[in-house]
Amino acid sequence: MDSASEKSIIALDNWLQSPAGAYVRAFEQACLDELTVDIFGFNALQIGVPQLDALAASRMPNKWQAATRTSHADELAFAAGGKQIAVAVDFEELPFATSSIDLVVLPHVLEFAAEPHQVLREVERVLIPEGQVIICGFNPASLWGMRQGFRRVTRSDYLPESGEFISLPRLKDWLKLLNLGVTRSHFGCYAPPCRTAHWLSRFSMMESAGGRWWPYLGAVYVVHAIKRVKGMHIIGPAWNKKASKRPAAVPAANRNERTTNE
Image (cartoon, rainbow, N blue to C red; front, side, top):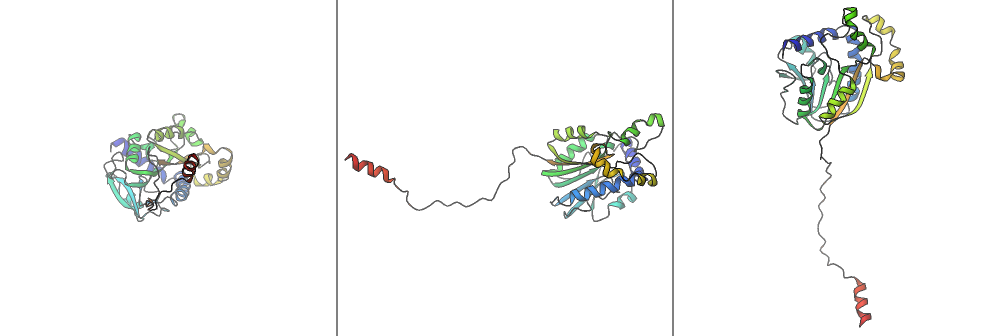
């Protein structure tokens, strides 16, 4: 992992401890719990952001937390809730066999990766056919995205610095190229870009209003997609069909027709 990527991840880790970061983690935790509880399989993988337990509600027997060699021990302590640690050089080379993972969760990884396309290609590689991926990201088309866009004027960042935030249509195009079909997308965190927990809570009424009146303008989105493999068909049980031992019947019409001619 290069120094720029490491710096971006550290910036994200620090931001997640802020009041706005806690606000985002609360929404994403509730959304991920709802999505993962009904996804079945054997192996689930969370890539990055150990401060968020993306697999808390998953009932899969094997849960993994992917971490880089530059990750700090205190950060990995967040992942100690029953998950095994998989150490990688970086997230562009995952230490898992091809078609071996049922579920992959990417909370705010693509935005801070040096090669987000390669990370997605690795995710597609390790997923089994019909495997599922969930991606969390900051929405540029939101009040928070607009506030971040004016950072040159305000001379301060609201969201983590060094992040390249990806719009939902753009992300869907990336997923489509890898045969990862989007099934659902959720938006949340409609409060204005306030820095204190007090003011964020004062705008809590905007959650229900935003979800109803401007649903696509939430500060964060959660996208759920499935790996589609062309040419695959669901195969049913192989029924054992035995050939009948009874002799084939002779049509009676032939016999009657012959008698008439005679």
